[in-house]
Length: 507
Ligand SMILES: Cc1ncc(COP(=O)(O)O)c(C=O)c1O
Image 1 (cartoon, rainbow, N blue to C red):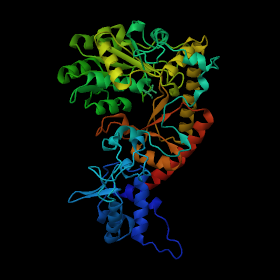
Image 2: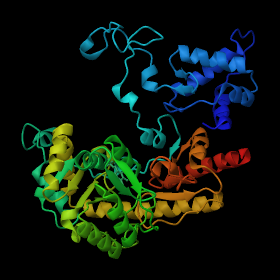
Image 3: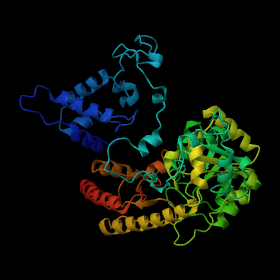
Image 4: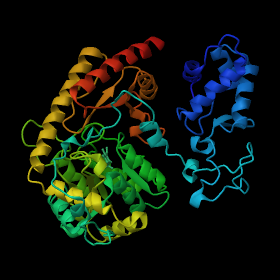
């Protein structure tokens, strides 16, 4: 990590000495460093700057820094690796131990065995997943208090949902009655096949899943063996990258223009990389670009001829922000049905809290997805599905979707106006769809600015998370959600303007 940025983060946490303060400088420095690690602001495996460099940046002696780092190592917060440096340990691995008897099934923890912590002598209650932290999600959506959250492109609350005349008994009236319908409730699959799944899929080719993020995980689980390649755009959806990473796939960037891949570039990449699948979004997150039918048809024909699969994420496909009725968003399924898998959810048109998504595919791929669903969680919550049936079957559903699109259009324009007025150096193209602006910051690193913005109370998504690790295509970008009501956007932009002034003054 860059020493100046690190010293700044530490400096913010370094308490001034109180009168009659007994704690030494080294101890106060250790406190500040510990708070930085525990807050999760430093990712596991982050290499800290050298003692010498940190001492120089903080105006402290090397010995003071060394004693603080030794203290942190003794507390299990960092690891000193001989000849290599000091590294942050996973937060979950350094949480204070739970009280005795609170282990699985209330079994007391004996504090011995292979997981015993070398520093405390007690078993380190490691969350097994702490050894494989999800770098993409933890860099993208960070925990902690912010006043305005422009990082998450979500429906802010459940107010888009109508009042339903439903009793608990109605919700419990599920089929099959045991609640374990593997494919999902028949009525829900019928409704999803009508919309939002694109034409061409009967209900028997629609699988209900727990949101589009689960659909992406099932995609990676079904289609990838470790080392398999996945073609992605230079800027793509982080949730897909996380799923590919989780199942050992290797994302390969295929450059394109703002409307996606040219058929030639795509054909060449398929030929060269023989991917397990190629990932597309007809309404793109984060750029908001809407795919043209001509392109989609050409890519579908390449996929068919080269016998490769297109995975089409249609999560935002209902959010084309035209004034009047939106044009249908094209699908490769219309041109290469046997070489396309479509997926999406109700999260962006109804509410993310429903956790209802869908996957549509033809055989034999469909059966493989069903098996992946079975081994993942057996079935999607039957209660969520009952609610989704009532919401989709409600006669006002299409009208409410249109009203939401109109609201989003107004909010998009409002955010763009606010930015143009208060942050004239920033640039973006007004997106034709989606829920966010993809903003370029002149001469600044999006990740560093996201940190500054967060300290001012506003969260933004750094551009770098929208590409495979190491990719630099979007390092100077941030994504700002415009899903929020206008007063929230106004407050957020004010904070962004203050944060930007501070950020620039430091450069
Ligand atoms: C393109 C895309 N795919 C998947 C998801 C995950 O959505 P869900 O809430 O349905 O899991 C999102 C949410 O932002 C998205 O934008």
